[in-house]
Amino acid sequence: MNTLTDAEVAIRAVEAGAAVVRATFGTAVNRFAKSATDFATEADLASERAILEVIGSLRPGDAVIGEEYGAIGQAARTWLVDPLCGTVNFAARSPMFAVNVALPDSGTTVAAVAQPLTGEVFWTDGTAVNVRRDGTDSPATCSATSRLVDVDIDATPGEDFLGAQLLTDEAFRAAFALRVCSTALTLAWVAVGRHAGYLTNGPLVDSVHFTAGTALCQAAGGVVTDFRGDPLHTGPGLVAAADATTHRRLLELIAPHLDGAVSGTRGGSSGD
Image (tube, rainbow, N blue to C red; front, side):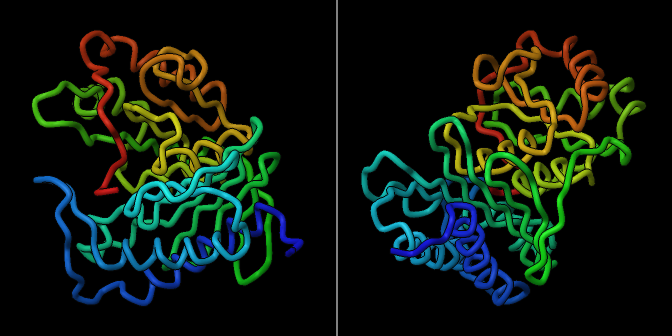
């Protein structure tokens, strides 16, 4: 039996997926439609296969739920895999995408998010956050200095979505600079101090899109709640903030838009 920690398994898994994605970035890839507005590519599928191979060889008794291949096995421990978070960005040759893996287990979540084009891996063992570059780990914490806040604007057609309202809210735009990116990558950036916050609708429980990123934010000391400031998963939406002051201001700006705007749509920007 190998002696690798779960965190090291997660890192190896996302590095394997990231290598596949990096090798195919900028090339012509086939698309496989999931719906009228969502698709996967050959890179999504190949990345997930690479991740499954790592987890299967190092943790053969565990189960996996993947974005592309679904549930594999049944076990007390289940890995959540998003092999390419930001598929639309990837297909458009925009560099904002990531590969993420999470293992929720006994109240603590091990997670890793890889940014393929920079070679960085943002990871946590559930207690602290590190950024790995060229095999070297550096500790990281949240910071609101950038004032950048990502608002996930994905929604089901015909349904109200809070994000769309916030994009035209003068008070919100005066308080924060807005960006839209890959769900996992943006949450990782909040965790390591590059962005001040992120918000989206749900559902979020056991999501391959959100679990790794929220685990990073929580381990880094960020404030992660629902739209009303209650514990995550107890109410609508997700607010991840670098500190209490930023979190409080975000809740103040969100509050006027809550009625009728939280429809429980999926979230997960840029073609997860």
